Length: 441
Ligand code: GDP
Ligand code: GDP
Image 1 (cartoon, rainbow, N blue to C red):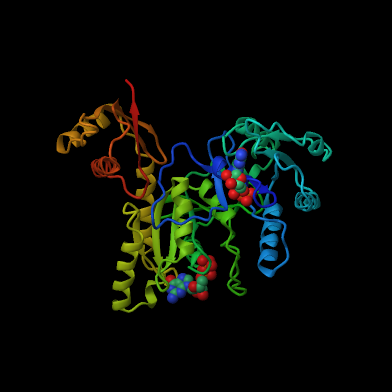
Image 2: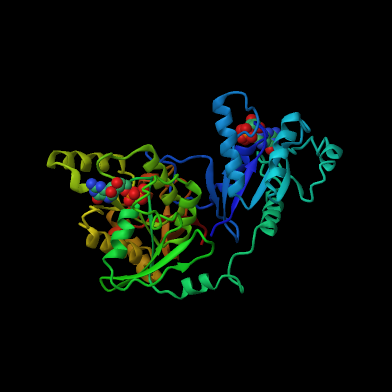
């Protein structure tokens, strides 16, 4: 499972600046688009050999009013969930009383910690060096988040302090998990949309339920199942399965668990409640799925309770709110009554296949030529961008790399045209498709 790193420090030391540096992806698949909301407190650092979840905890100090106390509580629980804490201070200002308060909280948690001296820019070379040394921290790194200095060294330090990925002798569980063939499926969504009902329905209808396979930690469960001729492994990081019908307590929504689940699956089913429409929290979960580049199917649940008029309204709202993910299939289901599930798993299989599509370069180049013939790229500064050939740079999700020259200012609308052209030609559904323009050869 993805480990968790918490950024902790008093306000204004540069936590959110560092958060952005750590979580911004070099090859962002999905640009920020209206309609995708994300909680800027949570992200994944992917450009490293061991990816991890980054949490910006906000303030741990300033507990005067109720609201602030809630923030402190949140920060403390983020530390609890973390495997590593980055204690961030402002090297220009030196240590303030608030910093000591924060440090006390970290020490209380007993979590491993790296002291990060931020804002080491041209002039300030750790002005208060002695002061920081007196804290007696074993790991101290100087960075400038704003100028992206010292980040590689910080990444190396983080890497060396994160627990080793499971494997080795540890956890026979994960070995078992890897042994299981099948599409790794996750069901994600905010509380109460019907995730547990769907999981239980999928399992209950299946007569060959194997036993649960413990995953990497006691929280990660992978459940093999066989359905309609297809092997699946259900990833249940958030423990939706174990929620008993009797208790029916609404689980606390955990962004961290959602990120970890997305990391482990091949295909995610995002569940929405048709009776409630698309909420901010739904849009936020969707944003994480897009960030993760996962194959995706949208399940519109509780379809049973709607009148024909409501159904129509619900469909059109969905089309409007989700118009930036036209490639994700929307399936109406009733987890409670078991309707639409065949269609849902069919869509998941199609999405899985599309995400893993292999296309030879010769064919991709032919596809590119066909796209260019149908519609030339608009001139840039009076000159025509040249697109010469294409190859598949990766799968899960497919990344189509187009080689040529003068590709720097090709209009976004043209890139989208290419994407749609390739999607149609290669029948790719349910997966993001990235187009990368590469100048040079
Ligand atoms: P947070 O409250 O801890 O999340 O802090 P922010 O990331 O919002 O940063 C607070 C201020 O410090 C902003 O004005 C940043 O631009 C600035 N800042 C962040 N990192 C650096 C840095 O490395 N050098 C300098 N000079 N300023 C920085
Ligand atoms: P979770 O929090 O996402 O796991 O949601 P649950 O599976 O616990 O479901 C929340 C509530 O929605 C429960 O009361 C379910 O009985 C109800 N529910 C789930 N699926 C459906 C459905 O298809 N139709 C209707 N009408 N209610 C449903």
